[in-house]
Length: 301
Image (cartoon, rainbow, N blue to C red):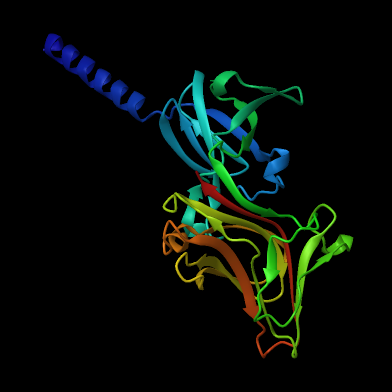
């Protein structure tokens, strides 16, 4: 009888041990991403950005999208290859988060003793139950075509008031009103001058119209305004306006990335393209003020 019971007890013990091991929590390693910054060349304008998320891939496996800064738990240790892409809110909407197509995969810098060193080909050695602290930088891709940049620092005007406007675009140099640099654009509306429309002073051909097109904008305003693509017909010279977005008031400086690909696609490859933005003052307010800076129109070559 004892000989029969012992093997049975051994089987129960092994099964119980396997079950416990199966459900025992594993100890993760941690990747602590402090920040993502943008580096620009002189011809690429401001390094202002609104990168809100990191899309993290390890050894080709997607781990998820995380708000920056973030601490990512990973059930692995040792050396692994990481790819971190910059996430933005397209059109300023949380539900339309994407990796920004005009930013490169980030370079990663490892933190040690309050200094940072560039990692070798984005390889990072994970340590179980410990955090590896990194910061990241990105740049514009080499196939980014800057259709125009308006930073209100130079005399030339990339945007001008349309014939229908009843006010002017001016440049303010008041420090408290300037986003960065020496100047920002400003427009004011009142009960007499209640409409403005800025439009491209020069229209440009876009041969690859079906490629991604985005407009970046720093703005501050106490009234909503609309923004979109202006298409100048190659046959008639008539300019059609296709609205991309209505932007809500922001009392503080904000940055937005506006999708304009669909509106560009409403034109033809032999047309010329520009942008417009404007507003009609609501009758419920006496005045409205708008401030703009670092307007970049970028297109994928």
